[in-house]
Length: 63
Image (cartoon, rainbow, N blue to C red; front, side):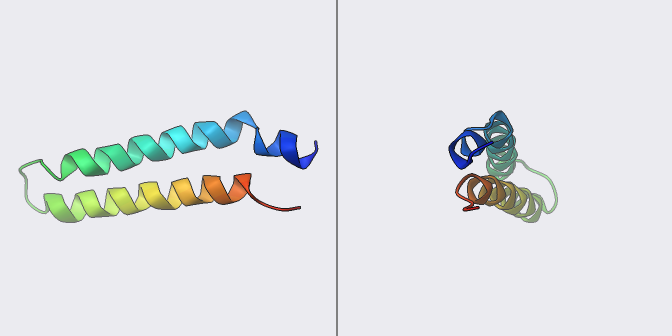
């Protein structure tokens, strides 16, 4: 598989969608009313950002 086909692979976009959903869960939890909701939402948001960055760097990876 050449680099353009690898960059357009479906697995990258599935990973991006999962990362966006994780990030949105973290954002929506900021408005929840339970103990430590801000800390939990920050952690979930950071996990979403890390997963998203991994997907983006896999796409732009130069072989």
